[in-house]
Image (cartoon, rainbow, N blue to C red; front, side, top):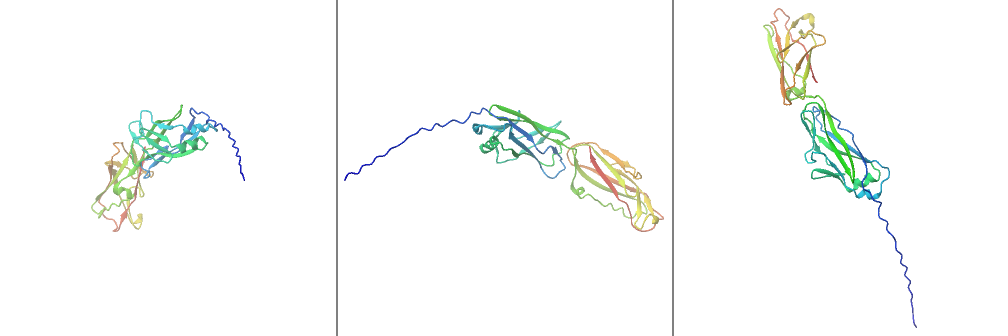
Length: 284
């Protein structure tokens, strides 16, 4: 018996079309937060950037383009924001969507794909460490974003506010001056410590308008006294308080003092005499 078999093969050619060309695409980039910096804040300030493709539909070939970010005349290794007379130091905040390559940054391939597909990317970019007491003003630099043959340039920065922070023992906010026996007069002093980036106005207000009042009430006696702030006499009899100014010297820790002078208080009822002085510090 003879068994025969026949097999027919059909071959067809499929033409693979190349991806549409893409020389570049426009990217809209904005800074979403970190627009204000307060050196007295104990938390770091984070600057976020938002990126999106300007065109609604892009060819898939755009996914292969390199998207780079760079600081003209600067470096990604040590970014700084320049101000009127100083610099605000910025640390690059690492994110999955971007990596640093030498002096510039480059978006990762998946991040580019997401942009091309129409997704909006929001990523942390800079961390401004707390406690940089640079003078108030706008601190910024320019950031260039390139995608193929397209270039976008935006300012990235933060407005530094007038700031003041109490240091050391002053951080508690209150201090008791014990004057002891005031029959023959007494002096007392309280020191305070602070950091600031500008001049400071100090408003001084006395609850009893410059008098130590007996613990059982004014009808049992009151003793007038005087006060000065770092040698500047203040008028405690003013209901709205009196003001002294501290000129700006440096961003280092500064000190001041509240001095109390009580004249002899003879022929007064025995007991505890007290007053409360409130000092409000206003950087400007």
